[in-house]
Length: 118
Image (cartoon, rainbow, N blue to C red; front, side, top):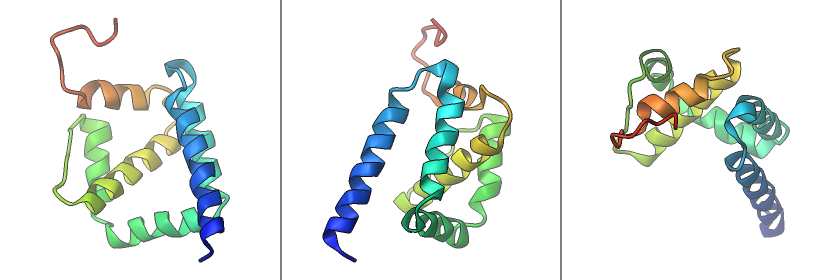
């Protein structure tokens, strides 16, 4: 694969990730859906996401635990962490709940003794 081609996609992805990371809570869900749409437009990203699904099918049910039961799950292998993150994001995208990402972050973030909503 051409190095310039890869660099172009790397830059597009970096720009989109930075934009998503700077998005505020009220519109995060819709911004995440826009980011997902961006990924779905390019075969290179589609192939990567399909690879994650194909090689880690059992992790999809683990993503349900994270979303429905607020269980924080961490794996020893980087690929497993990437795959579970993919499945969680995919389920968030499919959700009509505009606050699903907020709740996951709230429940899965280590507590510091402060009110996380303030």
